Length: 411
Image (cartoon, rainbow, N blue to C red):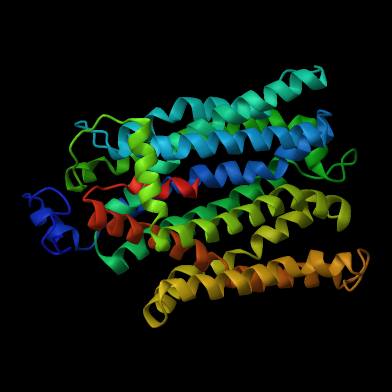
């Protein structure tokens, strides 16, 4: 087998800074910012997600069982489309590159899906709203896949430098987390403020049309900024020979990846993280509303206490990965951060938490979250960097670039 050094990892040198010193040099700040603007798409969907289950269940009257079916079906669709889109973008060739055509194609289904999700017709039956919820959610998730999978793969392609890659993907993660905080506060305080009729504004149906319009317009703008702002990097990215994509080849690539212990370990760890925070995202709104009896303004405090950790995450991740390795950094950050974040509801359930009318309730609740989110964002940054390393390992073993397939687990 040829060594990694002797195997060509991309097209030959070009006139553009000797292909940015053979892809090992610094990526321009403008490119980093444009690439990271794509993280606002996921942030916008996440911020709106605070209200999704509550909207269909409590406002429109769809049973929790049917809402659960919607989320399950959407997850199954993701499981099928994510690796498929990843493989398609890995093997696609055009003068616009491998990733950008898919990112641009996501604009219509993603924005339309988001809009109709939060702007259903008035006064319809539960069955109608269930079907509407299902169709809108699947459409939005397919659109999200067409953007997020190639976007994540693009981040891994911008450089081959080990630490520079961590920096690029780290900035993307930090921008996404800060965007999630700011957009969540906008949703809770601006779109759904507490009123005399609704102590918790998320139960007010009048705010959802504004959420639909503002969210879809914002996502559209950020997608265009990302696609247009990174288009000048297309000549510097890895080039591949066009291949006809067959299901058998997709399965073979996936099996090959899963045979790599490093990728399998990351997949299992990421699955645990996603399931945990998926449950937290859906149940958390109900817990804050009915368990801790918070107003929307009080709920927004939870987002503010996350901010210091987001600014600290990038330098902390760089410092830890240089002194430890990426594996131990992820393990320590995930375990410690998740323990602190999960502590308040756990103590609440066993009766060792301040009462809702206690002056200590809010400090105890958000103090624990503050400490947890000082550490937890490091995991997201290092996970992305590990996936980029796996893509290099896969190329070394097989001779094929497969960032799209590798990063498909992220969405």
